[in-house]
Length: 178
Image (tube, rainbow, N blue to C red):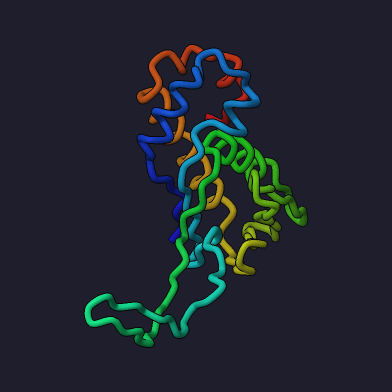
């Protein structure tokens, strides 16, 4: 199963509306606006899930009544969702997958984190690997392309619905992968 999805964050939308996306520079829109949790799951491998520092271990809990400290086991589960500028992933990710030739490797650098997703095409398959967690998965290239194109379409549809007037920004949509 291939999933590229995002969680619509109304607080982010409200904050971005106050920064006037209708007159903002295109680079600012692509690199900094609409940063919301994104999930990329390929063949049950969550590519954006960070590796937790502690996955299972002892914690100390202080109880106030009666005053005592007790030891307990805790499990920390990291989230498969990573905040990424939606337009950046939609545009850059889709363009990378579209232009990826057989035998070629191209990295998508995740904005703001120094991490990347690497795409390596082998015939009709593409291997995707994550520097965030070391996971990799192989997928049919046309399925990966379809997943990115569907993501880009959904991002555009939601943003032009949520930000009236954004559809008029021809400087933004001219190079958008539709």
